[in-house]
Picture 1: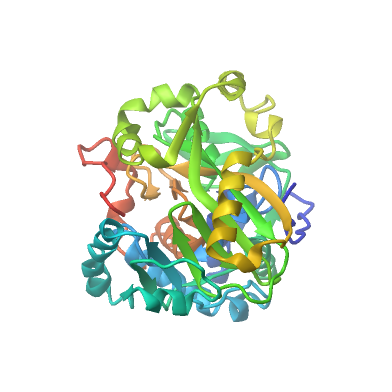
Picture 2 (picture 1 turned 90 degrees about the horizontal axis):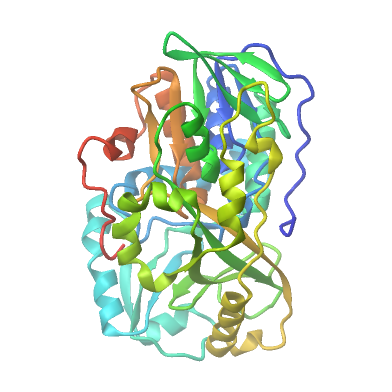
Length: 441
């Protein structure tokens, strides 16, 4: 695995009974398990691979309210509140630092786009503001470029994905959660139209509530239970540099370059573009995803090749006493797109000359789970009593993970939700709601 994730040892014994089973050991599943354990709920989390093995350890590490879809802002504000006290909450280092985030504007068109988001910031009390010219360079130490301006949010921050999620999982275990790794959930055991348990590769767990936080695997899991969840995945490529003393401290994104300083003194760097492999689900959900494809065309590359046939084989039906696709492929570990990394590296060195000669210490690819409107599903499923889905975070999941975990736990336990869950309801894909992404966000 190209990302060094803090180790997390699995529990050894699979409980026969739980109040809630969480499927998936990324940040949302782990955050949900932590919240449930804090409430004294008997929770079992099952992860087919390792904790944070996929996108939860491979993302940029940003924790931002800036530029989000307005429907996500209240949940992200709750997440930032939780991030700021996360080290104390879990008793370990998560790498969270409030260093601010910056969207660089190379021209007036980009500046106007960022300016158009400010009313949403003011509505929710977010401390975003616009900068002009030299103000941007003042924040970006060592910058050799000049920009028209930027959108800046000093209250935002960053954390270390490979540290934070295992630390949260360990905290959940100390509070009584059982966390099983290399333990795939093959499917739901249903009786009279509601959940009676789950069947894992290591045995059955009696339960009446299940949280599906399976990331890019969630749509396939839903299909095995007769549910249609329109979700696709896209590949993002990232590199990290060796430590450097005089780089910028604020996390920044601009055309062809994003960067944020890591706790080890290096930088996480990306070009920002993604690749969408054409797979069978691309045709299954083509109608729903056509608007976002048109809107984001310049930043998405479409490819067709071996993954199409691999997924065709992988997604065939299986019974609960057979090996599932979740056991056949434990961890998605795609190769990064080297051309995207080459462009990102060139842009980095042009904008910040101090990076010339600084080694690239590693690189990786990660698969992002995306919905047609780029807003997650955090919702009970009306047609299947006992199931809660928390997925489709569309590249925003790490930062919003703590708040999403709390909201998911609220829904699973029937508690008063921390924010209004209506925008994240599963039924929006079938009730006639317009699921076109918000332009310019």
